Image 1 (cartoon, helix red, strand yellow):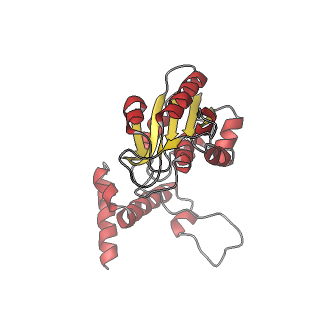
Image 2: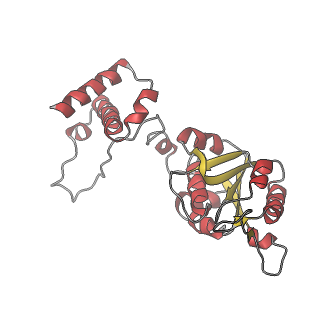
Image 3: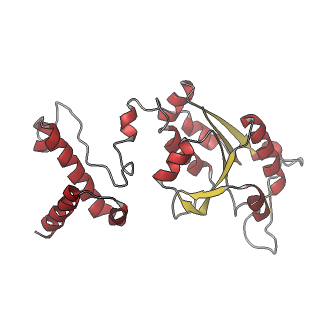
Amino acid sequence: MLSISLIAAFPELADHALDLGVTGRALKLGLWRFQGFGLHDFATDARKSIDARPAAGGPGMVLMPAPLDAALAAARKWHGESTTVVLLSPDGAPLVQSQVQLFAAAKHLTFVAGRYEGIDQRWIDANVDMIISVGDYVLSGGELPAAVLVDSCVRLLPGALGDDASATFESFAAGRLDWPQYALTSNRSSDQIPAELAGGDHAAIARWRVKQALARTWMRRPDLLPRLKLSSEELAMIDEITVQSQA
């Protein structure tokens, strides 16, 4: 079972989100477990302080090491053994699907959410194994990015999705974007779905899906294409797509 803990100023921000949908259902099924550790619970003064002014001055506040130390000790005790400590911060490595797959295959993960001006660097140097960013932008804290990361991991656990194949046929699973999807309904007759999808020819459907996935990647994320190991047929599809776009 995957065990995930979250150290944060406000872990309930992630907790509420993870109680719903796929992650909530997987939690009830016992596919993973989660525990939040709120930094204010580990503060030692009467005001429950978790931050202090930056050294040498400047705006904002910095999370202090002491509450973080106590929270991490509690998280390690909860896990019962060693745990990989991952800091959510905009200056981390970009989150990609291959890394998500590694996280999902782990046993014990502790996510740490930064807040305010950040975390005391001495604590990061001593305790953090990896720093991850969910994008080139800044949020008020790392709790919601942590929820994003947890969701991306949990949905890959066997049994978490209604159909495990759903995690195989989607954007980034094969290094490219997904193909367009159409709902099978009876009240949208004026909006015809592509003929390939309605014909029942499985080979034609498969080829249409691959070509559409490549076309979408070519248009929206061309940076992904050089990383793909394309077959001769897929390379021919790219040529078709290029010619059609110039027509």
